[in-house]
Amino acid sequence: MSEQPRILNNRYQLERKLGQGGMATVYLGRDLRLNRPVAIKVLHGQYASDEQFLRRFKHEADAAAQLGHPNIVRVYDIGAEGDFHYIVMEYVQGTDLKEIIELQAPLPVPRTLAIVRQIAEALQAAHDSGLVHRDVKPQNVLIDSNDYARLSDFGIAKSKQSSALTDPGTTFGTADYLAPEQAQGLGATPLSDVYALGVLTYEMLTGRLPFSGDSPLAVALQHIQATPPALRNYNPSIPPQLEAIVLQAMAKDPAQRPQSARAFAELLRLYRERGNQATMAVPSANVGRLPTTQEPADVRPPRQQPAPQARPRQNYAPPLAAQQPVPMNPSTEKRQSSGCGLWVVAILLLVGIGALVYVLMFTDVMDSITQAFGGKQATQVVPTGEPTPAPEMVEVPPLVGKSESEVLELLKSLELGEQRKAPRNDLAPAATVIEQDIAPGTKVAKGTVIPFTLSLGPAQVEIDDVTRQQFEVASDTLTRAGFKVIRKDAPNQTIPAGFVLSQNPPAGLKLAQGSEIELVVSIGDMVTFPDIIGRKRADAEAILAGRSDLRLDIVDEQGPDLIPNFDSLEPNTVVSATANGQPVENGNFIPRNSVIVIGVRRP
Image 1 (cartoon, rainbow, N blue to C red):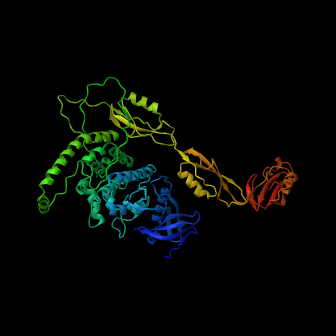
Image 2: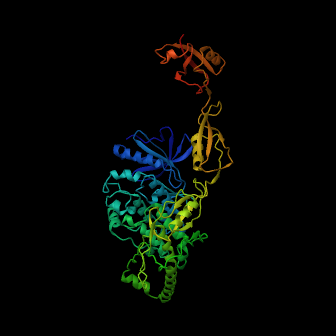
């Protein structure tokens, strides 16, 4: 195999090695054309001769390049030079999440939730586009100095499935984060990514992986068969409610997991908003104090006729039963019990207080979580004097895209309650529903509160000055800010081709996201070809004679062999033209001082 070039395709310069994996080496590089830093992933040589692998690799990389999400590392280009196949990606200054875990875990709960929710949003965007990541792991999550997370390496894991799990030097995904169905060879789905994200959350909160073994195969078998240890075995300060959510994401049966990455993020959001007070009774030596929640959202019961006889309140259990602690051996137990009478009393008091707060708070938290996802959690039976009548069920209607007034009327007609969550900016018109927490078609009891989010309309964003920038850079800047870019070409004698001459509206103004911004782009020292096709020969010659920036060379008289509609044209009518040998039409831009040949109908 030939020596690796330092500049790929005369555009991407390799500056220094950032890291190396089983499939590729990643370099810090520079795009010489756009003068910006990039990350360049160069595949290892053994893959260069695997045509099937390369086809799948390119297909998945192309698909990943279409993903436009702020929490996904952008793919700029895919290419090859000789035997070297590469991907050019956005360069993120920071570190990967694995390094953060190794140095700082267990991470504080608020920080963990903030990072995991960003990863979940990235996965949801990919899943909505039909792409499953298949290799979610902390090494593929890049974190900048502001704890902004970006997910990378989309599509690589799928391409790697061409190799078996037991092939030397290869893995089927990454065994530490492998969903049971993947380990069984059933193929990956979006819920496999949810499982891996659950394992990643487990590791962030505890500093440990749920399963370990002497080989990837041994770890994969545990994902299929073994029950993960409770998180609180390793970090007792983790709130039980949060532990239950993480273990639910790691359910062996995909049907028992949150049914999307967004659903998992929503469980964490609901826990954060409504469950953090319960954590105050739990000792938090390793976990930072949770911030105060926002004011409660506007929640109203359904407007309906006088209610029937009240039913007893249902107390929802957590999504997964808490795991039993790992048993200690007798010697360890004896050492821990000696000389600790006062500690035992203190711990019993804390446990008693914690249990009381847990009973009071956990019910409300899990009620909200259960309602938001269709009431699938197990319920405790509350003894009463008479059997409790089954609640009347209705289907949750689709709300997204409807106006607030339409939604309120619709929910009222179905005897469902409403909860307006904090509105946010969106491209949808103001007061339009942009998200609902309970999926349309889900059956819920009458009286269930349906949370939904309204749009505030597009955000107002200040326009950057992108004049004198290359069009690709300027367009990228404005697109990232949420604007639509319209290109208009114009000649210019001093500004090189491809650079922005002007923008409209100008920089400094504030516009709603989604608005159009016109960029006038230089096409270099060009002139406009005059409007002579269709005119008489004498008129055309006179017009060209008056143009110092063009030179008429030949007038070609043509017959019916070259002019299909010869008989319908008047003699000496200009029917065609070329500039420097290339066909040209009225109004086209052509290089200054071009040599012109015109074709006319012969007399």
